[in-house]
Image (cartoon, rainbow, N blue to C red; front, side, top):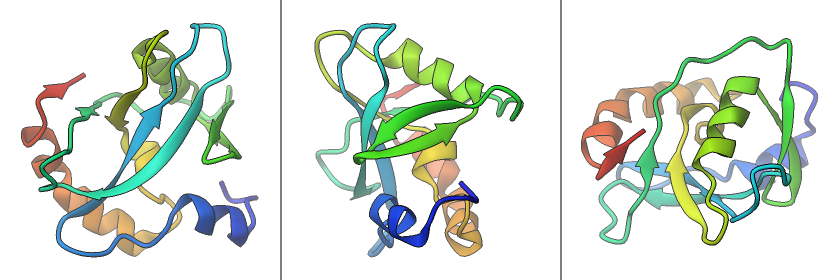
Length: 130
């Protein structure tokens, strides 16, 4: 993400405002071998319509980066995150997840710190952790 220009970053990572804000990732349906297409959506942890899967995984090596399409922009993610998205994507319907590597703006130290402090609430407040 270091090579992204500020226009792409600002379209992906709009400021998080309000009480317990976070972003979730809506995975569009697709076959296992098709490109990953998704949307980052800003919401609040206590929103009554929040239904998402919180994911827990190990960040992987930077040696085999993969590309996804997020909000119309090409985003490079680590292989582990790509594999997780591939495994969680459904063929016939969208699925909403929370994955720290994508949902948190990793280039914004203040946001990253605030979101890390909310992680326990994210994991205990959702119906399913994968």
